Amino acid sequence: MLVEFDVAAPDPAGMVASLSSLGYSLPAAIADLIDNSISADAQNIDVDFTWAGRDSWVSVVDDGTGMTEKNLIIAMTVAARGPGTPRTSTDLGRFGVGLKSASFSQARQLTVATATDGTWHTRTWDLDVVEKFGEWRLLRGAGPETTALVETLVADRTHGTVVLWRQLTGYRSDEVAEDDEKTQQQFYAEAERTGTHLGMVFARFLTGASRRQLRLSNSPVEPWDPFLASHPSVQRLPAEDLPLADGSVRVEPYVLPNAQRLSVSAYQAAAGPQGWLGQQGFYVYRRDRLILAGDWLGIRGLRREEKFSLARIAVDIPAESDADWAVDVRKASVVPPVALRGHLRRIAMHARGQAADALRHRGRIAARRYGDPLRYVWTVRRDDGRISCRINRSHPLVQEALKGGQGDGTRLRALLRLLEETVPVTALRVLHETDSLDDPEPFGGPGPSDEQTLEVAQQVFEVMLGQGRTAEEARAQLRLMPPFDQKQGFWNE
Image 1 (spheres, helix red, strand yellow):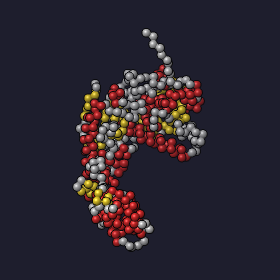
Image 2 (cartoon, helix red, strand yellow; image 1 turned 60 degrees about the horizontal axis):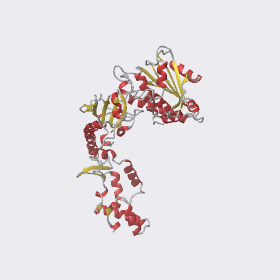
Image 3 (tube, rainbow, N blue to C red; image 1 turned 90 degrees about the vertical axis):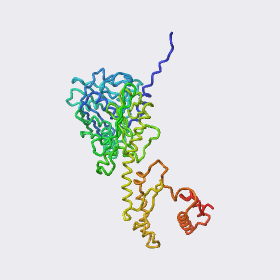
Image 4 (cartoon, rainbow, N blue to C red; image 1 turned 45 degrees about the vertical axis):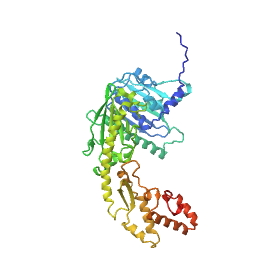
């Protein structure tokens, strides 16, 4: 039976625009290139950022096995291999678009040179050419300037691969001059941020007996271990192997040491690129490559909270289960299989509980320290399941302000500024047992006012009268003023 059909080939310019808009950050795009170097068994990988105004460029050079000319063309073809294509045990790719999508998101010109036996083959994607002719014209070789750069990067190598980005996104404008110091600083700040990201993503490849050498602008990229695995105070909770299809998923929970058990520099380093709050949660690895760092995976009832900042959980998924985990093209997000969510939630709840205990111990220490009347202007305590914050009336500055009518207000202004700067955030964070039930409530929460509430309201009322408001205007203002808007008193009678 003859089936009629139309060939609906995508427009190259539209496809380029789509690939360029997948949401890659610069560090994530560089990481995708390094995936290819590791898959090619490279032992030395060099990333370079070179500032030259609108002609600035970025390169990744490795000493891997390289590619034949035929394989280079396949590698440069968009989606030449589908996700079901068989791959080697070291292959970190999946969709066959990583090199192109990552590169197109950051540059208008992508050049790749590669060799397996001393003979170098070069191909270039110039997106201006693709859009001009409406065809996927993969250029053989490169322009004179690009060729000169590639030859410098190749040096005396007989095998390996060079990836070169030129006409960088955000730096192509004629207004970007080489002596533009502000833009230059931004360029190298991005390079530094990239180094931090690479140290996190490829940490497992940068340590151990078979470690790779990864350098950024000739300086070694330092690995970042989110679990502080070598620190004696880290709590290693029982690891589990969760069955999934024909394999298993390894889950290893850690509770990190609190600040009292780390030096200042170690504590700052352990916080990670996103800080303690942002780095808590699951760390999903695929073939030792970090896919997702610090996330509760959208599991019901789990969200980022300060009291769980010490909880970090390693999850190792087999590459064959990519589809089960919905790993995206950018290798930046995953969705856990339904069959595992209950187990992951159970493990996370236990780790979070242990982390909260560790921080609560720190909080009890902090609360005891708040007992010194000469040191702290706030006191924080828990009574009958409620957290309360009170001004320490034994503090000398508070005592002086309470005398009233003395001086020119300098001390009172100093007290108010001190109160603004010393809100006991840390103590509040670590003393919380639940999300909101124990939140401090002004004057005991909504309802009738006690004597103290009425006294404070009366003082505010009299001040407003002294400032020229009528009694009715002052009462109306009190009715709208927190916390009196939630209380019953003379202002709403």
